[in-house]
Amino acid sequence: MTDDQLDDHSAPSDQPPRSGQRAADDTVEHHETGISRAGFVAIVGKPNVGKSTLLNTILGVKVAPITSKPQTTRRGVRGIYSSEQRQLVFVDTPGYHRGVTRLDGAMNRAVRESVIDVEAVLWVVDLRRPPSDEDRDVARLLKGLEPGTRVWLIGNKVDAAKYPDEALSLYRDLAPGAERVISISALNDPDDVYALRDDLLELLPESPFYFPEDVRSDQPREVWAAELIRESVMTHLRQELPYAVAVVVDEWREGDEAGGEPLYLHAEIWVEKQGHRPIVLGRGGAMIKEIGRTARKQLEIFLQQRVYLDLEVIVRRAWRDDRDALRELGYEA
Ligand code: GDP
Ligand code: MG
View 1: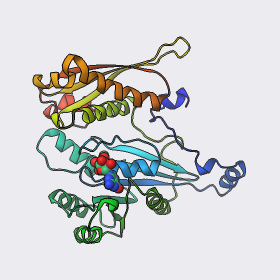
View 2: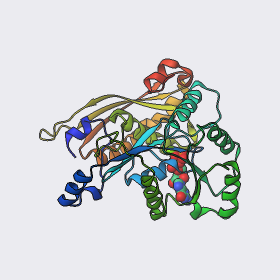
View 3: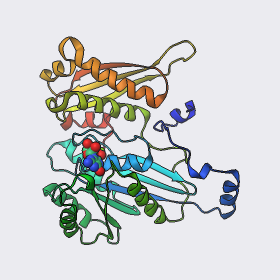
């Protein structure tokens, strides 16, 4: 990976070679036919149904953070898939969910905005369970879309579902306008996911690419790194601190490979209450050390360089209802 790509604000890519790069004559042929196609696809669904997993399988690289806890995807993270002359731009939305804080409002707004002007909306549901109120909320959101918006219902986790057909038909009743209804296992059956991706490629209208073809995400690198760190916090703390944690990477200083100087990152971990600080720090700082170790390893794998990760835990009361704080986190609050 070159420095250029990082400066590009793209998420680091460990992408397998694209088929478009196969052979020089291929390229020549494409220049002669010269038609590129591109468009947007929204992924909606309540938390924890597997939206991030689906996106990551489509892209073949980890872009959106995944944990087994709901609501880790806080912003519309776009993943970009480019192959030959086609480009799919995905919007992986935060789960559309019920809530009262300002953050919930900002998230729901982000979801509504993400389903404007798309070639298709993928509504991902969890086939292990029948529809819940949250699913009905999503169904209502879909009813409010521009007429003619193409909706595909994606029944996920078919590998773990006891009654997948029954569940799917209950979801189908909530989305009578769905053009297609598909069962997949985003986690365990990539071939189904690649077939879905190919079908999406067929939908694309003629258009120039929206992003350079080697860019996989439009997240700033600081946001991407903050999400990795937040994922590590969530993994290590499990039940103890459900959602009241935010991470901001406020310093990114390039290292010097030759001089043995690692990349330096400083991140603030925001908690809402004084009492949460010792939980994140752990006894004698053991917890924050583990959080840092896990996040640093991930960062080093993706960035392919040594990283010095400096974490600071800060009490920021009621940040979820604080406009300035939300703006700092990148929301239009
Ligand atoms: P999101 O909140 O909708 O983005 O959901 P995630 O992609 O973060 O996935 C939530 C959880 O479901 C994670 O623990 C995933 O490993 C799991 N998961 C996702 N897809 C599948 C699947 O196809 N089968 C099974 N068994 N688990 C899945
Ligand atoms: Mg997610």
